[in-house]
Amino acid sequence: MLMERYFEGMKGVLETVEKTQKETLLAAAGEIAARLARGGAWHIMDTGHMLMFEGVGRTGGMMALKPIRITCEIQNPVRYRPAPARGIVGYDSIPGFADYVLGRANILPDDVIMIGSVSGYNYFPVDLALKANEMGCATVAITSVEYSRHLTSKHPSGKRLFEACTFCLDNCTNYGDTLVEVEELGQAICPASGISASYLMWALQSTVVEKLLEMGLKPSVYISNHMPNASALNGEALERYEQFGY
Image (tube, rainbow, N blue to C red; front, side, top):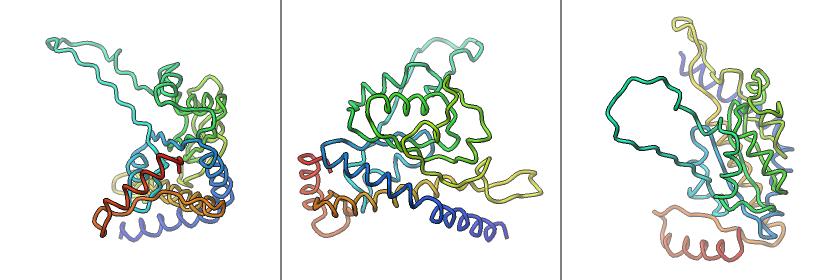
């Protein structure tokens, strides 16, 4: 069954993550905890599909992790006229956009930015990482190294995200990011990157919590809104986060 092949493939990816990423997880978590302890902030900017939602504001998650959300709308009620697609440009290909984002998001030199991109070769995530590094931030990539190695960077530096960041967490997915070959379709189905990236992100958060506790610091963590006294407990934790930054 295709389902069984998916289960087997996904388990294989997660096992590879566990075998190969622990050292980087420990190093990145130590850096994040140290920066939080001295007043830095921890941001996430994901060009993929889930980390901005999965990793932020969830029960059991750290209040310190904050999303950089980008919205841009162009509205003009002009009548329909056929036109070439010259105006259809993604923000990930606009030179200088990373500088704008860093400024508007109030990024400071001792902060940490976690950047998610499965392919890791578009202009914006690479430029964001390089510009943040220049500021003195620590950058953490969540990407597919194998996938990215097959692609040519769109950034003038020639770097891909895994080459541009201080730390690289490899989601260990393959080129094309699919697990199950379906001969009848002539292609593969079932991407692994979303679950794998989430696996890495929660492993990282758990280790940051551990590092902070080892430093004698109590990180602020959400509990489910459906638990007893959740509103009061989350309110108290939020006050601690606002005061201490972790």
